[in-house]
Image 1 (cartoon, one colour):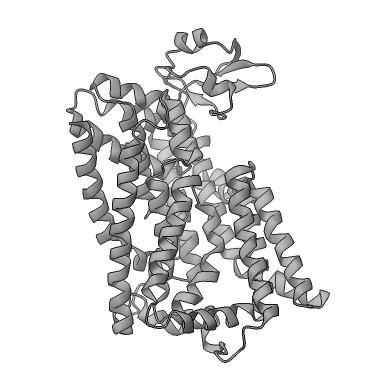
Image 2 (cartoon, rainbow, N blue to C red):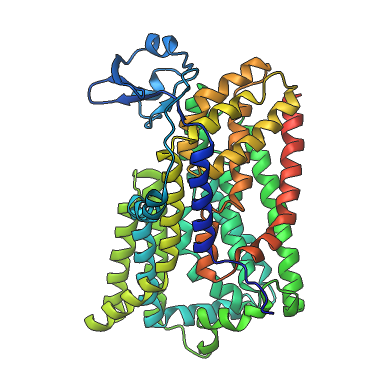
Length: 497
């Protein structure tokens, strides 16, 4: 009898889409009213299932709707998405999704996620050009020689730097560019691909989980809760230091074990295939790192520096980021004196290598669209808000942690979750006599912890790049997830007492 294989990322997401389709038949449809601010007309639009009503953009309007948020948060652009209006939930006519909706959901998801899909494909093209120049091989060989005996520094530096990106500006989707680049470096350092994957993914995940000045998480959530983002900042800094340290120590222990005995790797049976995937089997370790190749590597690195500066300070998003990598590929083509036909062929091949990853992102977005079209997201939110009534402070904080973790399966977007849930959940803190910053913390930590295994997030796309199964990842991450969860629960309990 053949051994059953764990399904691929695409199959897992299709199965989740089937489950969500069934839920739209079982979970009652419902909707909260929402409030959107229009800067051009300086007015609010109250959106309900029956009508859209224009209201004056004043503090009085917000108070009348039971929204405890300063009007300035809307007028200065801090809150730029429609927010949920508390106490407006109502059940609606059931809107179950059928086979046609299920079949169309991946297509709708791919269209909706076109921005990140094109980013992934263009990055793939850039990597194809880099491989053609030979700069990767030369650079990796040089780095392996330089770090010989001190390879652990790579783990500490990469995880810390990416965590800093996560905590400051929510570095997440952008990390898709790092896997094809950094995994070969870790392999050349005699680690396995799981080490490289975990440094990038966990660095991003833990950094975002303990967001300090991240405008797409902490700041927008605090604004939607009606408090300053600096409230509770000290606790988040402590959590960041604590969780990053725990994560690095965990990765170092696994990496040391694998380096000493490669058969201890969770993906040892895939070693040959992964080496081939990243070109380790054909890598020429004697290739010289010439000045031309150094310049190409500098241009390549500058693409990421420019992207980070643009996102952090210039209001850039996917279009600008994608254009940066496209321009970088063209410049590298000129420096490397690549023929036009060879450039196009290498770029197309590089993009094709990441096509399956792009499809995974699209299918995951399709799952979210199914929930939205089935009108069950707000119903789940409503019933989640009623669970915590009458709870003790410590129990309340930890219940909210798990509620947010569960909700993030249905709403993986951090900014979307913030504006939809904060106006509804943050007043619950007043009822148990704790600060609203605790709700912001439970939102960050709950989403962040579940993000590490959330199939509707980015983990399946990241695993697809490295060709590692979700079952192998779960085996690696579950012990760390338990440690981080217990640490978070203890920290939350102490912070509310």
